[in-house]
Length: 93
Image (tube, rainbow, N blue to C red; front, side, top):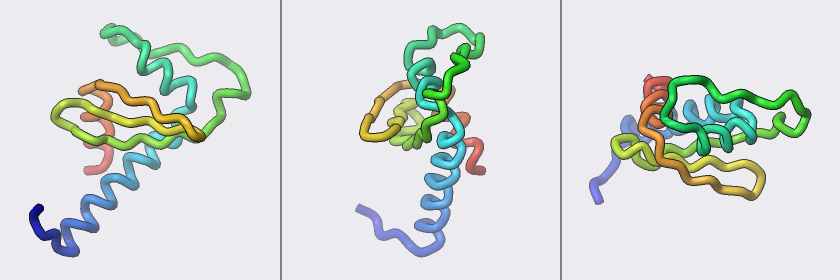
């Protein structure tokens, strides 16, 4: 494992925190909709229900392969979505 200097650590930590902040805005049902969404470009429809107002945290584990872990409450949802991973990564830069 390579040694990490302070600048790299802060840069990576900031990227993760920013991605989590972006993902925290996405309701839990939206996270499930992303998982079940087909390859179409149409945005997922969200139900108008108070149960969707739950915080969600996204952890991009591998940008190149599009691996993202979504956390809501005590639930972890692992997805493979290159577009989502790329969007979250771009939001941090």
